[in-house]
Length: 325
Image 1 (cartoon, rainbow, N blue to C red):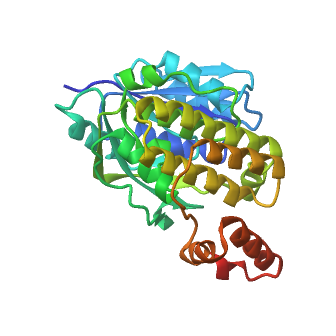
Image 2: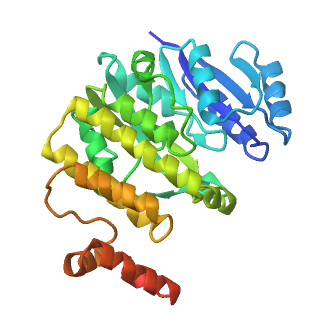
């Protein structure tokens, strides 16, 4: 009647935020939960906070300590240790509303194990009560996981992984997280999960508050190593999705994924841009596609994608790039 839900929380140097995250997890109205906490070699006192909570709630918490090996390794360790029938991932600085898991479990009652539940996620920086909604169109039911994937790719949208509640059988089919990736590990993993999903159900009341990364995090994600890893994650998308459906609609969506990569990287790392262009060409002859904001799309239709990127870059250097969004 109340299947166990494992809340998997990898932690690395989140002492400033992890208490709030743990309180939101322990404060769930759904009664049958466990927290699987993996400290990935924190040096800022995070592990001491985790030990404090473990001492208070030994029957609800598994605590694992490991040398720093990265979020993918930590998450894989957590998945292997989890005992729950359902899996809830939670970043160590994000927050769940108290009804999130309970509402999703109710929604999944009577559904097949291949059904996933999602909920809305909101961005915040300091306080959850100041969170704001993202104007995405992914917050509704989908007939299949593939349909949700195509929505992501065609419209450059995403889902915070904390929004999902997934049966452990789907997680095991997709397991493990790719430990060779340094960015977008969660997105790549959930593409593999969603390709196995028969249906996606939206729960409208529960929410996830997703903490906006600081400037330091963002700068690290723009390094050449990170961008090369991001491109490899997109190649993983392609390898997985064409096994499920190799159609024109899928290839058009993949083309937009690679275009978005070029849009984000340009004009840095020209060798990575050339690789992305080669991947687009390998998809075969496809209709012209347009990404970015309305103004950028208009420029692309008139001048072409690469010339529009050059104009956007020119505008950026002169301080009025918002006109080209």
